[in-house]
Figure: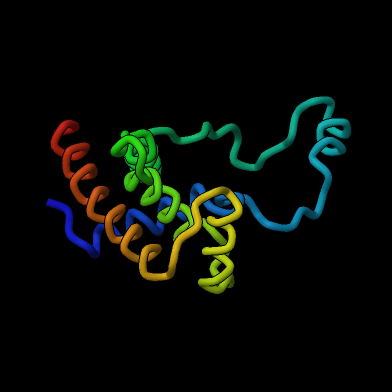
Length: 142
């Protein structure tokens, strides 16, 4: 069973990997293309080649959120699962310094206008779905 604290850790990992450029540095000190030209197509590394990890905890969260976004709602009404998935993305993946009204404005720009209360209910709905989905993923992998 996964608890709220473990879910918070998983969501932090997801935000670190998928939000605002992931683990990449935000400022570049050197042009990548120039490095390739200087080293004839190879970028030197002190530790050698290290592949991109797949199947991480953040990937499981992303897969669960994609599943939530693709769930069908009641025809003729707002899709609550889709709204919850987009609210989770706005809540965890947007820049930390953004105020709440900026997150709501961004959601409204993409066609998901809502009140502050609806926003937080959708985040809680999404978190509840993730608790169940991540338990299922853990049970399947065991």
